[in-house]
Image 1 (cartoon, helix red, strand yellow):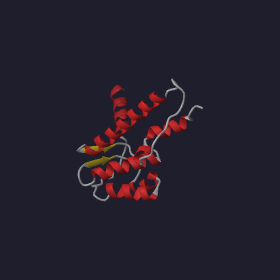
Image 2 (cartoon, rainbow, N blue to C red; image 1 turned 90 degrees about the horizontal axis):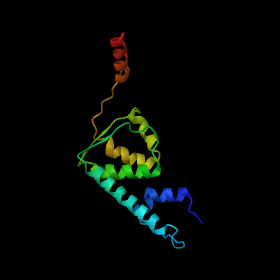
Image 3 (tube, one colour; image 1 turned 90 degrees about the vertical axis):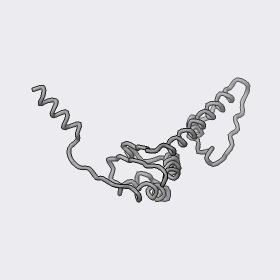
Image 4 (cartoon, rainbow, N blue to C red; image 1 turned 30 degrees about the vertical axis):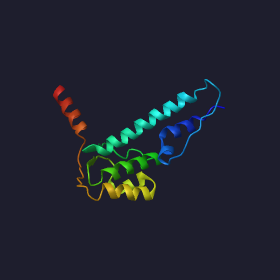
Amino acid sequence: MRPRSGAVQKLAEGSWIDTHDNLILCGPTGIGKSWLAAALGHKACRYARLLRSLAGAQLLILDDWGLQPLEAGSRHDLLEILEERYGRRSTIVTSQIPVDKWHALIGDPTYADAILDRLVHNAHRIDLAGDSLRRRRAISAVRAVN
């Protein structure tokens, strides 16, 4: 029986490692057990390294944050990163979404409270308004051509 691609994708996300679960791969010789185990292992190593590197960077920039709601794994990862950074490192967040709408984007109210507590309360905030700089440049370029 072939595993459902959704099951393999879920395993690749790595949440089973965070919860200290085990994985058993059974099947006949040559079916790909070792290959799948190695692939999941490499993915897990990259995941852990990425989280450590994001948590340790002096400045982390989350650009265009909130373009889509967070999935469960992303909520968990973001909280882990921000928890590790809180009071130790700085983060810049750019977003088209006003801060008062972020709770809904995060989705789970408990995670949202925890994430926003670590991100918003010690942040300097600047709300920008006006025309798009790209639009202004495009208008200037058209005028320069004419």
